[in-house]
Length: 221
Image (tube, rainbow, N blue to C red; front, side):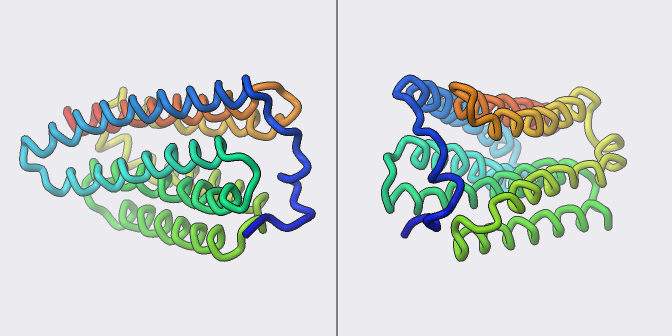
């Protein structure tokens, strides 16, 4: 189980030990922060018997830990059949994280046709993306990057309900997180830059933290 022989990923320079260590530290810190933050937020809503919120945030938490867990495993694994298998799950988990984040955000808004539409489109896109990543590994990678960005930009369609239903600081934190994700893509593609992978994952961690803060403010307001 491996990538196609002519896949661009196989032609990239190998990361140095220092780059791998830095990348591993970023992932580990993100996972530790996530365990603390999600435990506190889930305990808060459970104590208030908000079971719908608990379910939505549990989906969100699952996406977060799948994303950073599979990313850590994939990026730390040496080139092998296992690494390329992990790559499938790593890239699939991005879709789950996006859809899980939307689930947590939309759960804070009054139900409306637009809110349900955005949620449905995002989950349908995520499920399709996961299916492609698992069934056709190594193909359509460029298209999948555009799909990640497009699903993230779906937030703009719900900006009206978000402005009406979320505290102001929460909205700005969510938007800042989205912009940070987008900015990080530049480092992801800058292969010649040393530590570019660690910087990219740091951008992902910061973006996830910003959006978690926005969701937490909304949940506890």
